[in-house]
Length: 317
Image 1: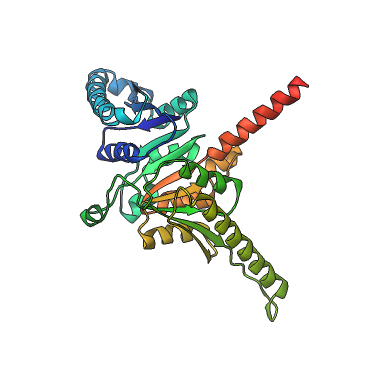
Image 2: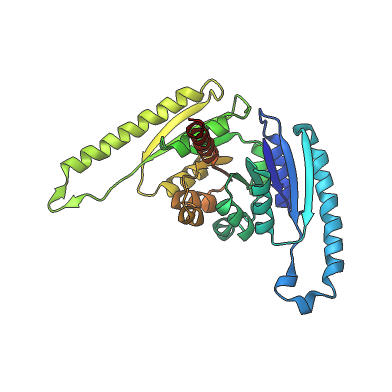
């Protein structure tokens, strides 16, 4: 498994490394630690040409020292660790390297615990999470000392998964369940059944009410089936279903109320427009969840592999 850890030498980046260290992947991990040093030449070459080379040298030395510390911290978890340190815009550097390495997961720290900080996340982590072709883990550590006393900040004790029985959400659950979690880890599979405005004339449409109840029933059945499927590896799993008009709101609100350490959502987008928007639900959760967020794109890899296999079979006929 190929993992890319993006670091800017900040406390948030160190927290992301600690979180990665706590994850017990069952597959061997090949880790690349990457730092982008910035490149002001492109915006203002005349004003930076005298002092930037020296600043770049200093920043490279600082980044390499930081990367060496992280490599030492994570070496027991990885079969191989490489480091990359180069000038350029962080988003471009990280996404480019992730594509070149064909990474399975990007890990990056988030900034800010305030409402505004959670809304904006930070342009770098937000852009990387939005445009990456692989899964992305945005790490947001506990916000205060009380949280840190109650739980291990580098370990997920309570995982909330947005689940709607779609291929994206099923693969998201499978991706998370493939890790070796503590048996005491609590998992909630949250299905959000839609509420529609069916006020027609003098009252509600009987057919509409029946359709809404049928959707609720199907979502509950899907959640229960997935719960039974993963109980062997995550015994403290429960399926939760609720009515709400806004799925993203429901996921973020439950994460807040239940004290979740990690929210997992599957990104179902495939088109360029989907990649740009990320999907309203996934984007909302990424920006509003009070904890770390794992955006799973494992289903894309599975689909690509299936397509490639089909094409190969067709070509051989």
